[in-house]
Length: 147
Image (cartoon, rainbow, N blue to C red; front, side, top):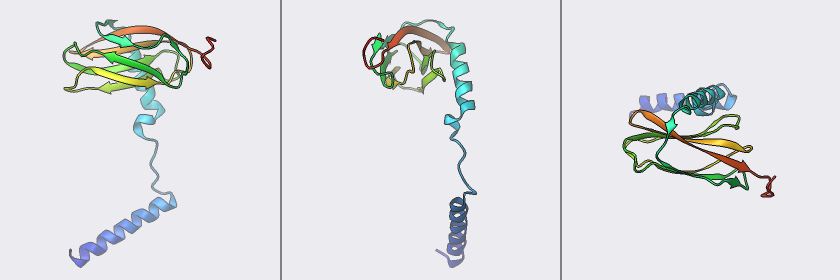
């Protein structure tokens, strides 16, 4: 390595480290975690929720004892050209709980979703450019008491 290139790199690195340490280069909120992104994504998913009835399997409990981890499984493996699978929880602050972009993969996902309270949950599958949905009502109990 040439001496001049080494010195330039060292000075640039130390300048960036100093700026980060001083708080001048702080990362803003991550794009996907921003409220603007969440609002746009949830609105798009809510618009897609007017889709027709789906021919895929949506497995979720009728009663969830712990709303922090509600297991859900969407099996659209018999559908061809699945490009997206999404989970929409209507009574959450941000209705779009999960969205999976699939390209060339089998249309199957399993996830644990956080639910604040009892709600209707839509499983949305986009295959071949059209979106279909299956809806389930999931009751969230407090401590598994049925309340």
